[in-house]
Image 1 (cartoon, rainbow, N blue to C red):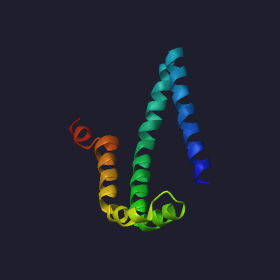
Image 2 (image 1 turned 180 degrees about the vertical axis):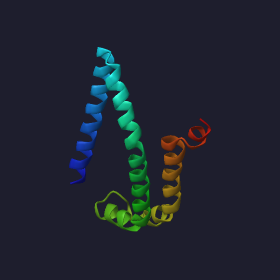
Image 3 (image 1 turned 30 degrees about the horizontal axis):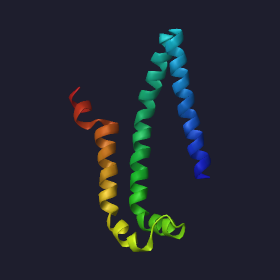
Length: 110
């Protein structure tokens, strides 16, 4: 199920990139302006979705690590260290979201 959703999202992003490239090549500036306006509107929802997923990962961290251990992706000797890195991982993802995606210091100044 998750693979299908990831492939669908990748396909939609790819189609958007191809549409933007075709619009630029054909010189259709109105299309690019409407695409930019659409992306501006969707941006807030995407940021909210990212923050929700980071929170969900933080809450379900022990379950995720346990599942990865049963799949053989996490060695049992490393499980305690990975479980202990829960807060660091969530803070790293949150910092990337705030500084890279949202662009906190630069977006506020402009």
